[in-house]
Image 1 (cartoon, rainbow, N blue to C red):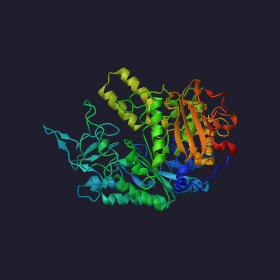
Image 2: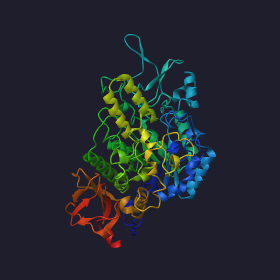
Image 3: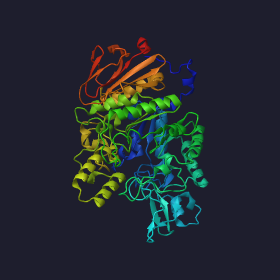
Image 4: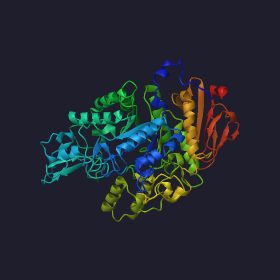
Length: 594
């Protein structure tokens, strides 16, 4: 098949083209990727060792989660020095070799930039807390305590930390509180401070000058807080502290800050993707990613990963996800970005999310690979930049249900469990229900070691891994999939090749939902001018009968571009879709050029 990479007679679309729109990204969580030293912890030389594997998958960019010097309270998202590499992962020379190895293979390097907060061991914070008169005092957010009617000291407001308890920690020496939206060891930076902002911009230039091609920006929409620090709305009268995102998610000066960041990125033709929790307003998001805004290239939207299966009581409460809600979210953002000059970051997994096959498909042995390939088809042929998380390309699954709480390591999960045990110690049934939710949505599900082979420790390490290897490693591993036709790895590689072969349709084309009412089948079309492709995905672990809607062309065997089963049984306009079956087939003019 051969579609023109650029249509000269379509200037509007051509003007919006960019390398990062046509790229796909592979995320590495370094602690769990590959250990080269035998100490049980993944490292940078281990990443270098596997660059050919990554290249074989067909991605264009490698994003590595934080490798900066850190006390590792939150697995590196608590940074103690932005210009130093944590010795557990390697050296600055290792990073230089990694950048060179990527560039030699035609791949780009994306680093994590965490500048909403630092570690409390960062020199900036050490200075800040040392004295109210210190020049770094205003680099963080300090406030005086409140007192109740009985004279008891209270935090400045009722905001809760994402990891439980108050978002404020009291400093005895100075008699003031500092803000930490996450762990108390992660104090929030004060972006109102000019000198602090300049220091962050200097960090960005330091890494861009070293050859880094862009940044994934952690919770970047939280950097501007409402300086009144008003109380959060009380959503649960039984709780002491409450979620205050309305006062800091996409705050009053966010776009001012992002435009400076965007200007720096443009100087280097660098790539930016922002993590933006707790905001779903389309107009506000467009301000961040609109092609004329010069802020971010794209954002990670949380509507799917935090919307369809989080219960009313939060992440670790149950909610049965519904196809109608998934379709509504996907259609909303596919259409909105296409029509308004924005761009989507396409993802279902990352270091903070459970494994897709376990969470929304089936990780039973007979279905795991089928589900993995279906999700690859569902996600990979939408409009946006595709993000693949390590192990997703193999169909890795969540932590097995029989593992006990002692196996979990994630700060968020353990803090939640501790609070539950302290506040409701005798509610055995609730504890069991909650633990089941951890097995679906704990961040630990994504952090088990990468499964390279059926050998000891899944080929991840010659030593004792820092985290228990998933029991599935003998059946699910890279060695058994690379080069094996029909494997999840090779299916992902085929999906990414298809995007590259047909950028007009799969990168820049229009998106239209098909059969929006079906609760079992997710189908959509991608169209560019007269070229059109139908994508059909059966989300169920059973055979489903699906009738082509009126106006759709009958599926012909020669029109099938990719299929999870290798073929598509057809009986006139009625399809019998096998468990987790997915395929893409030509509907328009492309057929004449195949």
